[in-house]
Each structure stands twice: as structure tokens, then as C-alpha cells.
Length: 171
Ligand code: AR6
Image (cartoon, rainbow, N blue to C red; front, top):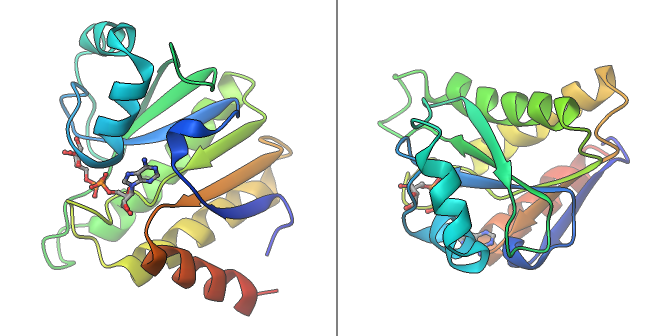
């Protein structure tokens, strides 16, 4: 595993990093889960900026400021809803990670933190999602010198244990 990849169990809204990623929906106007937590912590400025973005397609990403959050930027991405695996879900999830990392480079983000996109309300199987996330981020970092660090932030025990074993297994 690339040494620029870290794993923590935490609430992503508390992190003092350059950018946190939001697992949003295509409206970009807030919701539940990590999206709700990010909007609550960021305050109304975030929603106001999101309104100007005209939404976001699945697999794509858009960036805003962090407002009252301790991070500088929020990168909003829209993960795929899991419909059973035959609707391009795996490629779309991989695109989320890739497009967030591209935006990170463009905005000089050195440390970026990802939640476990699509593994909550969108029901993407957690083990598959973790494998895709790790593979995508690792291959990106192997080809780019930036960002300096990518933090996977797990909120639930199940994801944390999964990431830990997948990261350990490839050491
Ligand atoms: N910090 C880090 N991770 C968190 C936090 C937090 N504060 N809260 C939840 N998670 P979900 P999705 C984890 O449902 O599946 C929203 O309503 C959680 O344990 O937030 O991509 C949007 O508006 C899970 O592993 O996002 C969309 O409509 C992960 O975040 C929809 O949900 C993702 O769970 C997106 O669904």
C-alpha cells in the first residue's frame, strides 16, 4: 500500500485538512448521512454556494469552500446508487475517487479526506466499495506526486475493519 494513504475512524467534519469529500446527491443541496453532517457543520454559506453549481452528475465532482468547517475546501461527489451491479456502479464509484483527486490537484490540495462513498443510503456493498476506493487511490498516487496524503475516514466499525484488513493485506 502506498505510504501516502492513511486510515482513521472519525467524523470527517472534524478534520483539519485541506479538503474533505462529501458523498452528496446530484442536487448538491444536502441530504442525510455524511452530507447532512457536512452541511450542518459548514453552515448556510455552503448551501448558498452549492445552489450556484447546478447540481452534479453521478461519478463527477465539484468543489466549494469549507465555510465553518476546519477544512479549506469541500469536494462534492455523487456516488452511484447500488442497483445490483449491472448498471456501471463499479466504474462510477471509481470515477468519483479519480475526479475528486483531479480537483484536488487543480486546487493545490495537499491533504484530502474521503468518506466511504455510496456505502450508506446508496447501499453499495462495503467490501467491493473499499476495494475499488483503495485500488483507484493507490493507482492515482502511483502516477502523481500530489496530493501528498489521502485519508480514508471510516465512520462505522464495519468499514473501518474492512479497510484495515484490505490495507494490511497488501502491505
Ligand atoms: N463522517 C464520516 N463518515 C460518515 C459520517 C461522518 N460524519 N456520517 C456518515 N458517514 P451516506 P451515500 C459514513 O449515506 O451512501 C445522503 O442523503 C457512513 O457510515 O452518507 O453515498 C446524500 O444526500 C457511510 O459509510 O452516503 C445522498 O442522497 C458513508 O458515510 C445519499 O445520502 C456514506 O454514507 C448518498 O448516499
